[in-house]
Image (cartoon, rainbow, N blue to C red; front, side, top):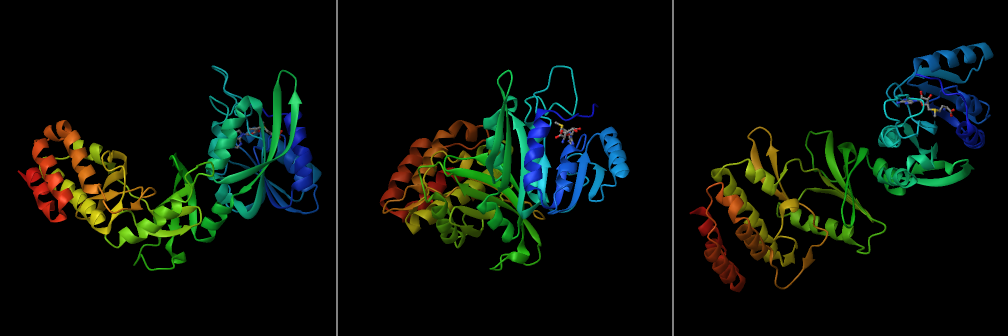
Length: 405
Ligand SMILES: C[S@@+](CC[C@H](N)C(=O)[O-])C[C@H]1O[C@@H](n2cnc3c(N)ncnc32)[C@H](O)[C@@H]1O
């Protein structure tokens, strides 16, 4: 592994480090040590921890530090944060940012196949090591894919400000960002949430997993468990459909009373925190189970539909609920599977709710999949029963009958 000798990128970042370093500093991927030395030169800096994955770089920089009696600097071998424990006011990172050249590997230069992979791992872990008001001084190049870097930053609930950019020959551009935690991340952390990780993007928001320390719990959802796995939905700032998150929180509160949906833990203006449902999407679950196991689950789903119809709420999307019903083994001891409906953003009050009739439509359309399990879906009978139910909800039982036989 080569030791990275300071280049244009190092000097560009060094200027910003001199300006902004303070308190306790982490210089990640220290290489020659240029950033650590720049930080230590600032009076506002108390201590600098300089780490690198390359033991040769660490050894050489240690010799320089010893020789020059740089008292504030401590040096360690570490793969990103692997040997680091505390929180920092400033984290400096000039990552290897080039896309990997075929056949050549060098941790000083290449950030992975596309160049941004190491940065993605870094931002995935960074929140835990950054003090609440801390800042990350981060350098990258246009060769790394700026759009991707911006996406990684926002997906990890950070916000970036461009401090400086510099054009290099051959159309390359370097950027230095100052990055801090977003207001949502601050608020979540204050409420005892940690390990927030991006899961997926929906139409109306982004979904994260996380861990919640229930000592911060206001209401009592828990008897003994200290930490619980949570799902966090954050409103997409670019989404035109505003207030969806508030709507989801409102309906979860109401429907939880009827044992429907993941448990709502708490919510804010643009986020909602709920129980993380582990399990399989309904059609995938059906593929792996027997007729005797499937029928009671289908009945429970229809009963949840009935409950929502009785409440005068339409969940929407119930005629294609594959992504919206998870079958989870809630009870790990008795392994009792439960269907849990998720995604209540589009829920609305209505005089003529259609949850059950939509679910019946889904069953009719899943005739083949259910048929493979020996469940005969009598389409005509079910549709007639659904019509009768539409007229009078007390006809609900006749929907269940064709399923049972
Ligand atoms: C582009 S050089 C920057 C060196 C120096 N900080 C500078 O500004 O000149 C990237 C440095 O990151 C180190 N590095 C690469 N992967 C790392 C990892 N997973 N953990 C820690 N350091 C890593 C390399 O050994 C190299 O020293």
